[in-house]
Each structure stands twice: as C-alpha cells, then as structure tokens.
Length: 240
Image 1 (cartoon, rainbow, N blue to C red):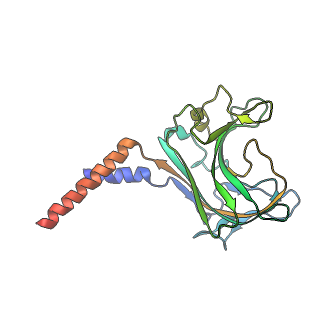
Image 2 (cartoon, helix red, strand yellow):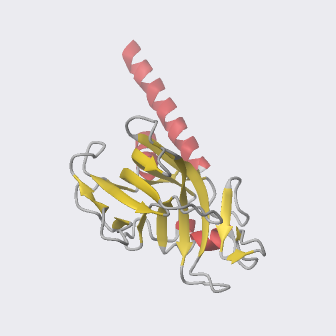
Image 3 (cartoon, one colour):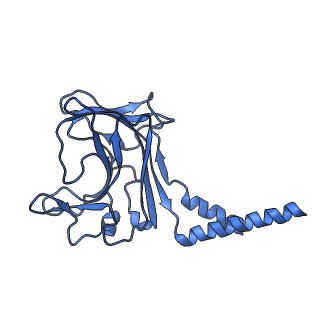
C-alpha cells in the first residue's frame, strides 16, 4: 500500500509535458521577419539533446509562444501549482554595435476577457536573462505555488489596463486566479509589458519547454512517509 501511494504521488509530480521539437513544433512558434530576412525555424544542429526552435531576426523583441498546444493552453487552477521551464541558448543579442542583455518573461494571456481596448489580459514574471556572454545552454524556470491566489504573487505583474504614464496593471475586476483559469496563450518573450526597446538582432534558440504540476503538500507528505517506510522495511529484511 505504501509503495503504491509513493508511486501514485511520483506520477503526479512528473512533468506534464515537455516539447523537445523532436516531433516538430507542437504548436510553438517564434517571430517571423517583417523584411524577409531571418526568422524562426526548427534547427537540428542546435538542440539541447534534441532539435531546437531557432530565431535569427532583427526586431524590437523576441517571442516564443503557443496558442494551440493544449498541454499549455489550459485552466491552470485545476492544478495546485505548476512549474514552467525552458532551455535557452543566446548566441547573440546585438544592439547598436554591441552585445546587450534582454530580460525574458513568461506571460500567460487571456484573450476572452478583453478590457480597455487592449488585446488581452495577462499575468507575467521574469524567468531569466538572454545573455550571450553565458556560454552554452541555460535552463530557466519559474513556479506558481498556488494557482488559486487572488492577488499577484511577489515578482508578478499584470496587464489589461494602463495608467496615465502607460504603466500596465491588472484590471480591478480580474484576479491572478481568474487569468490562470482561462489561459489562451503561453509566451516566453522579451516584450516586457510597460517597456520598449529599439531594433535588436536576436540569434537565440529555445528547447525543452515544459510544465510540471507541483504536488500538493499532503501528497508530498505521503511520498516522504512512503519512502521512509520502504527504507525501514528494506533495513529489516537486510538484518534477517
């Protein structure tokens, strides 16, 4: 019984979905050029253990997003918590003849409840930095511990309304949980709400985009108790 409980909890904690791009884009896409130069495509030579989605483009920012992969486009309040992960390889982020860095945020967008003439309502937070001085692949992740939270967790921002200075904020009739309940697009992007940059050249690849459910505290306790009991049983058998 204890072994069965431990196995069941382990299954809950396992990654819900990981896109390796080995089976195609699986609904994920990047920006395409406005001038016909560069773009985003699957690159079999760059993957972190598999092919990667590779963007080479001059644009105001870079974005990798999905509106169709139902493992990501979903009601997140059905989970206690969730961790989002992504591997990034920043070969170059070039602006005015020098390498620069750009913050990468994850933005969870709800298109069904538009307000104030803006295209969507969203919640977002920084997951890391695109920095070409860091050699090799970098793994970035962020965890939402409680998807039922009404207020924005520390480090999170909202979008759907703007003040007189153009600073975005979450509309007063929306909550963190209400946005998570109707996510129509998941985006990893350098277009940080409220900020603007000039044309920048991006040579960046992404891989292993994942979501993992966070076990509920009671389930975590069951897992620890089950593992402890299994270890004790193994010790008793070893002494016989």
